Length: 415
Image (tube, rainbow, N blue to C red; front, side, top):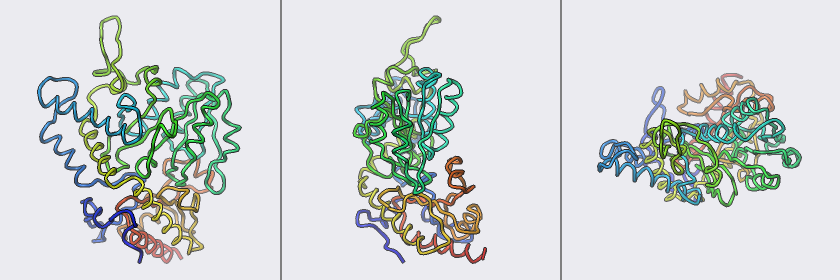
């Protein structure tokens, strides 16, 4: 059996803080939750923070002078401050709350791309993009006449940087790249890609949905013009995402949604927009989710993001080493754990990924199976689907052993 904890994190103590990990599934199997790339579980303190908002100061923000509204407004604004500090932004003006990473991608694509792109312009993506990026920019390309190009993925699951240098030209207006692949686990050279875009006068958008939850991220160090991530993948609640944008760019962009709170003055003839970030947060926002996200950030900061990253790399290394023992398991993405995030996509010879996931469920092991919202990438890999085990701060090597025991059961059933 594997070790219970890394040198950096007290995983046994951490597990006690996540109530869902105590439950049993199926016919009494202890839950082994390895679907963190889809969504992570929540510690008691995040759940309590959300419940406390509803129990003690539930009110709408920026709309009342009574005490509850004032308390809710302060908490909501301070959540922006917490996010800004967490990712190295210059202030709350650069942090826009959305529903998720997908909405953040759409916000930039429609508020910026629909107005700025036209025939002859180019948007460069990668072959490992999540559909949130690929489909969004593909549709904007169809609406504006801009060409959408793709940096190829090499056989070992990395970006072809030589091809990237040829694809990004002076006609490129936007380079949109996933920071950490949700299928391959590849940690892309984000800063180098941002520099490449800027060398040609293009903007750079980084999809950090799998990066911010698992490693230190500083948007200023990376130089990104836009950066997006989701709260539910980092021990926070569903229903809230983040768009970071450089202040001068957000100032220039038109709003994506219209309505209450994003306005400064309205007459029958015209409307002027509110200050950042409220200009892009129309209507009643996700107040409780913002409170929960701020608490999740405080929790992760106490753990230390360097420690979170080391723990994930250790789990990835252990999983890769164990899977390498079997000739009938095909792993996708880089094989060096320091080159990838804490997830492993794989297939077992002769067993469809969906069947494998079903057998895993019989063992109490929760994984994801399918194309992981990367259908074109799976087409390139030559497979319809893959199984994916993804790890977080509360996972152990014992749970990876349980995963491999379930794989062996599938192996025997389909022999």
